[in-house]
Length: 130
Image 1: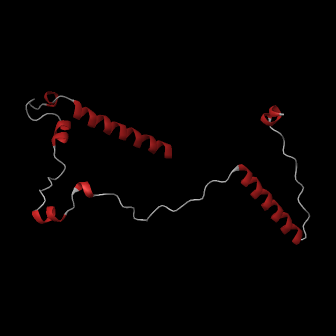
Image 2 (image 1 turned 90 degrees about the vertical axis):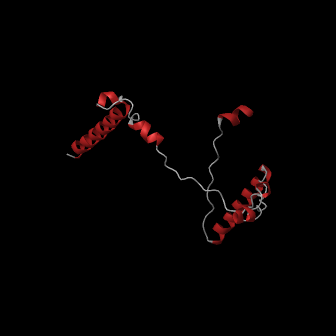
Image 3 (image 1 turned 90 degrees about the horizontal axis):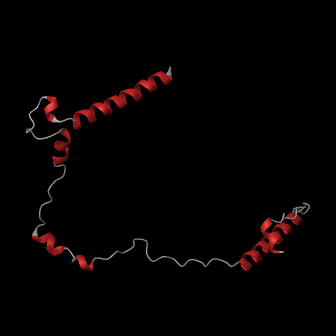
């Protein structure tokens, strides 16, 4: 039943769109209006002014503004902080071994057996390098 109503809503939407396009794109003479009456509804929409004219700024406003050439962007959050440089591969390996050692010490203190590490399977790329 839900699909039935969804189908009808979809058909009604397409029908409305087709009707609007037909009325917009048809020549005015086909609608019974004289051709010199202002054009199609699309012409009327496009020729309608939808914005306001901005008045000229008053003297005191122009005098208080800085010249446009002197305006520069100033970040609100301050200067960008110094970020650390990325670590090299050797530094990452040293950090990994340090963390593995600390993890093994923590497991020993907790009275747990050390985890058995399975050897990493070599990929085709590593096998080709040997």
